[in-house]
Length: 116
Image (cartoon, rainbow, N blue to C red):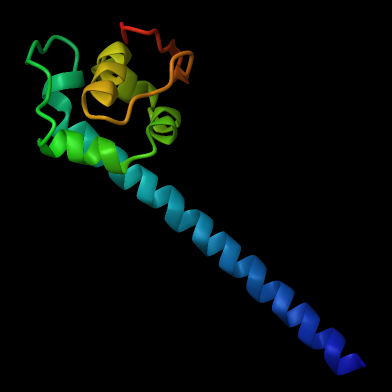
C-alpha cells in the first residue's frame, strides 16, 4: 500500500515537471516565430515603410501561416509596438491567409473588417 502511494506521488512529480518543460518550450516557440515574423515581415509591418503587400509565397506569409497570430499579438512588447503598425500586422495576417478575427484585440489594436 505504501509503495503504491509512493509511486503515485512520484508519477505526479514527473507529470508536473513535464508540464513545466512543455509550457516553457511552447512559449519559446511562440517567441521564435514572432522573431521570424519581425524579421521576414519587417517591410510590410514596420512604421514608415511603404512596401507593397507580401506575396502569398513569401517567407513572411509562410511564417504568418504557421503562427498562432493571436499568440503573436500577446507577445508584442512595447519596443515591438514602437517599431510596427498593428493595423499593418492585421492586414498582413489577412493577406497571408491566417487572418486575425474581426474584433480581436491585438496588443491594444482592435481588428476591423478592412484591417485598418
